[in-house]
Image (tube, rainbow, N blue to C red; front, side):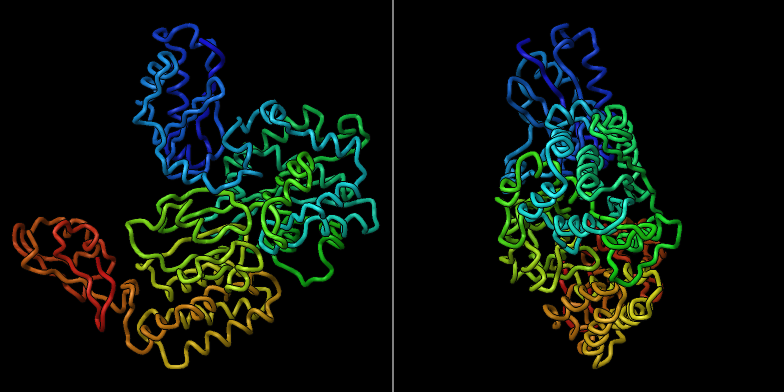
Length: 601
């Protein structure tokens, strides 16, 4: 067998959910089998790797040999034996199981910078990370560079915080460095709470050592001896791999006292969060680490001046810190070579919603929304029409299909009424009601408000009440104007970023989809056929076969009728869940508007 063969199996959360552990065991068993040539056993090794990005195709498996790579998709345990026998032993890849052209299209316009090692190495093996240049930047920083040299390099790179606000990282570090005092802290904010977001989780699962190395370099740059990773307990795999990586870093002398004989002391502690969305805000996060209720405080002073236990503290999110080793290793010019004039580098996004190719992507700033959705994402699921893209999580805005040429960068998205945020990107199609979308995100932010300031605590509740009234068929003239006025007041007077950005979904949907608000309020209809108060389900007798399928799925018992005879729906009992509509194979169940027209299949 010429050369070694490496088998990489996706074992991020998505890969495990698709059966990655069973696939891994199947490869181990097949490679140990007596039926496989001894030379294959000797030269083959199966490794777990982090998220590969194209989550919709899991379990993804790479077979790497002689400098080439073959990638298999949708792999199940019972497919493994054939791959081992025909590909590994016989030298003939199983063609029908290899990824198709759209897999390569998915990656075509991506630039894997911070994700360069995710999916390419075992995240629980420090030697694998070191073999790809890991900790070289930390050694260089501690032995050859002054703290100010590191800060200046980051400033030249143009790296901005990837957690949402986009504050220049080098400037933040410089502020903390210049603050007097011997005790300083650096914190990694891994409290990723946006619905549909999994960027930071995937980075920690796939490359925890990059986060650790970034924190180590940052600690040396600002003069900190202690660091914290604040990560939500709902990420057990990320916590497990981070804990393993921290132990390995200590064993190899990259954490602890007198790191690599440089005289510098630094260690990291993991702090588990309990899932409060507001603790993603830096001052609320600090309060939580201190053992207090996670509630924001007024700024200034900023954490870089007065943070954890009143000491200067740098807080960066996972993606920001994981970028640092690559910048210090490859140079600020390399990083600044991607992106736009004001938004340098790349950004990781979780691409979800009504999109064919969902997954984790990394793109250079300056790419258009259209390129992400149609070139990388493969277009809209079911060939329906694109309606909008919601960026920035529950605090972001909805950008309409007419603005798909918008550049993805901090300034352009802000001009369009949205934000980059931490990196959530939800695609919406013609079957989505934009008023209901705004209501959905307000339900989230209202429930996650800490309640400390009145504008956020009461204001988000009032916004939600108005949106609920509109989607329930009880909207009043002037509601849209009231939503706008209240939203602006909340943005201007809330204490922290949660309240200051919570109205964004409302304002952006009014800005671009006011006609849908008018349809709900004036015409008493939901154009998308989503809001239950405006719709009814009926059965067309001439199409109904009496198959009883709708009867079996109806949770309220609203469908009556005998087998092989037409059924009918009792409107007073129907809860309008749509289960019958989705189940009927004969299109006998119809969704109709109480007033006006709606979208139907």
